[in-house]
Length: 70
Image (cartoon, rainbow, N blue to C red; front, side, top):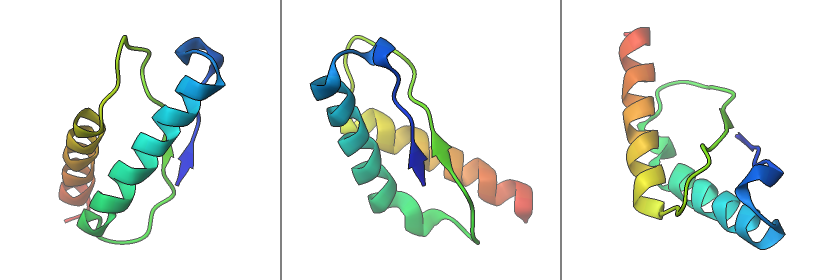
C-alpha cells in the first residue's frame, strides 16, 4: 500500500496525520480483500479528516473490488 498526500492538504503535521489515519484504516480493513493487490491511496482535500470516513471509504472500495473478481 502506498499513500500520497500533497502539500495542498496543509503543512507536514497535517499531512502526517492524514497518512497515519489512512494506514490505520487500511490495516484494520485489509483482511476484507480477497487476493493480492497494489494499492495507492490519494485522499481528497477537505476541511477535516476522520478515521471513520477513511475506514468507511476503504470498506466500500474493498467490497467493490471483491465483487469484480467473483
